[in-house]
Length: 224
Ligand code: 4HQ
Image (cartoon, rainbow, N blue to C red; front, side, top):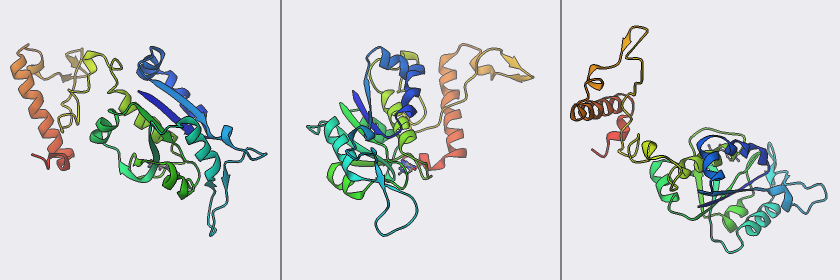
């Protein structure tokens, strides 16, 4: 899997050097190419934005450097080209699983009031939102999307943290987890987890998952 990320704030992506994702990139499980949109500006001041036609607050990213960056990065249109935007389809685990089947994802991060609509019309395959709130740019959404999809790339997760056993993969929220000590500040780990009976433990965990899902996210139980 190859990710290309187009942004005017490449420093945002230094975070990809850390943690599980950093390790996975270092060991060539997938690639990430951070592309600075400004490098494709032909303006003498390397401008990437301009005033909105029709007036109004803020600036809009101009089409030319952006389209040149997209076509320069993905000349044969091998990638699924995604624009991160609150107008897009909301990201969820089903969307993540379907994106994880792609070999190449190109993520366009817009800043300010967004990008010229014609870039979307000419170059973008899909718009994706990470939720109903407003950010200053598409960089954090791109990082969220990359992080969620990367978990499905072979070798990124160890067997103990695989994608098959957690919240959402069974359409339920996770049961509570405990580790040592068996008693902490007067609070005991449930006895069932200490007795080594795995049939009973699995039954308890399933009941806990169902209980917390009913309480907190009854909308997730519509399929039952
Ligand atoms: N923005 N999910 C505005 C978002 C966003 C979101 C990205 C802010 C695009 C122009 N993107 N820019 N929520 O709030 O994806």
